Image 1 (cartoon, rainbow, N blue to C red):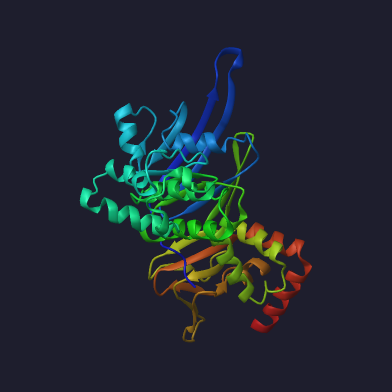
Image 2 (cartoon, rainbow, N blue to C red):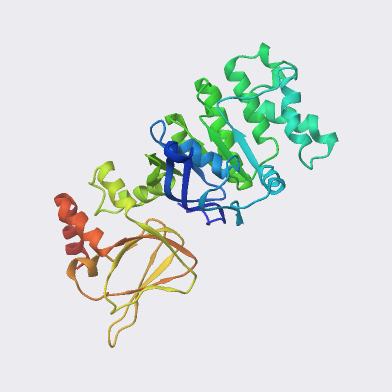
Length: 368
């Protein structure tokens, strides 16, 4: 069981407001939004119609100008960019919108090649790259078909191929699978996952299609122009899988485990670092997601007692329950990724879940 190495921040949204109209007709659409997306992440944006999802997406894509706050793409501030600079920035972005905007006079291959002609790709590579991308979205047999001879779903897949053919660093998609059947939708989301994993693309998808949940890293929910929640899907699933291996958590329901996991924070420790020290007060509970750590418990006149914890190991609960100092030192033998639960949240879970408390009491009894 492992946790991915964190990549650079691809999209950084800070305190972004946005208004439409002027004077008495002026209406605020976004309110102080903050959001970070790392390279290699797929983030789903959900929320009711009119909640600001598409407005935020178009601001990130430089299709609208930033009015207030800051949006940075790979460190470049969008506010104040000149038109020429905006064009250069857009060349790093793949756009997928519900309106496919294909040129009716061109074939599927020619529509996809348009994107390549705006890039630095050698002309000799254009046909091969376009054909490979159309094959990837299941249209290898429709290379020479014009849009009027394609179904709505096929036209959407051509638009997706056009958006991805340049291997963009950022992909912004608004309901990309809405017009696709189950198989085509699955192929497209798998393609987006590969683009994120293999090339480090940051992908933001506005959607109500729950078929995409399986490939997403996070779900961001917007209501009335505000980001109201940011749920870490893959990270939460990883934490829950670890917690289920711990006897003290295994009787908890998936809902209760998710509640606990959402309160846990990722921490990283280099090899040789002391994660906790014997004698210190206990303030956190730890589970190891990746790496190995050594438990050292020393007493006067005796040799250290040593145990090795790997992925799925947990520690720190004894001091929290007994309100006593740590009874051992835990040192990272190699780089360690751990998820930590603050003392207040740990004890809150105990108070809420009686069966959880019984499980921990049993564990303490067996640990002596």
